[in-house]
Image 1 (cartoon, rainbow, N blue to C red):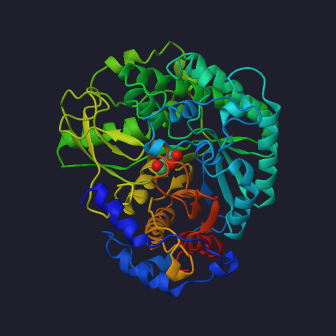
Image 2 (image 1 turned 180 degrees about the vertical axis):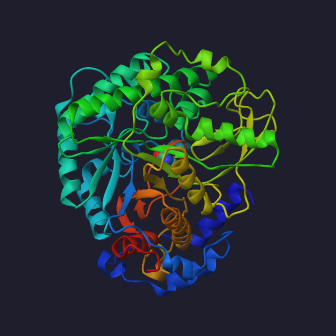
Length: 524
Ligand code: IFM
């Protein structure tokens, strides 16, 4: 079944869309119908964890249940209170770049509605809220003194997060670069490392009395690859050389940011929000196993190695790319930043084989926030692997395979490779297009999402039982929102948003996740 057929099937399953009127309190009661349907669907996930094991799954008493968002995806208010233009504003305003000509101009209007949404998180017993700050609200053109209106906004927002009983987890950069910095060459220009450190220093100085948990970059591999190597994200360049230079600047920026935050705020802890996918070799051959290791090096731990050890892992089959990155003597010291904890996302897995070909980068199939090569030639001439999206498990409406076991493999591998660090799961989720259903009083019966989280969280509990020090899990995402080049055609939210009038309806998955957070167990 192709992606279009999946979308069609899901829309049909969603039923007619009209708005919920029930109170949240009424909705949070256990819905026995949901439970029955849920178990029926779970059976289709290969290797499903059986009900008794799910009931036995345990999380630490102080485990931080949370949700995540990102500024451009939810805030809207794209040009008010002195905010500068970001590369996503420019890209979305350029015809032909985003599905349905969508923009983030309004998105979920979170800039004005954050109090209401934080109240939902509170009612759902959440303990941690991961959000990002929009750099062009703070420094409209990317350099110079801060914009007071931007700082005031986030100061009020942080107060509201704390009042809702949530830990503020701040990502400094979730892809909305000030356009002024792109005009100076963007991330391939190594000066951006210093500008980023200045921005980080401003945030830590003004908000560091209340924010103690910071992640410099969301998914650094994805935005450098998709923005500079492939061109599907802004600034829309497709140059392997630019990708390499951008990746190196980001490593330098990560180290500089770490020191800048620590210098401005003694309470700060700094970690990461990397995108990771466990890579399984296609065959047991030495070549495929080496290719899977190259995938892990390039996509999963490239920036982590740079931070923890001041070096890049062996991701390429030749030395040429390392020479093209613009590495200067002494850079290893700048890159190095002993992260206080390691944060990463899990969505799906990859099957990887040796390609040995001479592919041109960026001409393949799109899997969420990655573009892979889809011919036997491999993704590019240097990493020379072929990464596939398997279809053994069911696919989400975004076409990503569901593979709960992947989070166990990833967490235990990172725990082993990095000396059992504190781990934060910074994102995990799935897109399903279910909407309010009139035959259920306008509730959103997104049972497939409940199955997804239940199975995956049971695997996470297994990793914790086996010794991994995981302290949080952030579901992606609090609200349906702007899904980058896909516009509003994907819905990852645990709360449904009607973009015609901004009405929110907590989905059944959100209600379920709230009960999980309250009970600290999965059989709720
Ligand atoms: O929406 C994105 C988010 O911005 C980064 N991680 C993956 C999500 C789903 O694609």
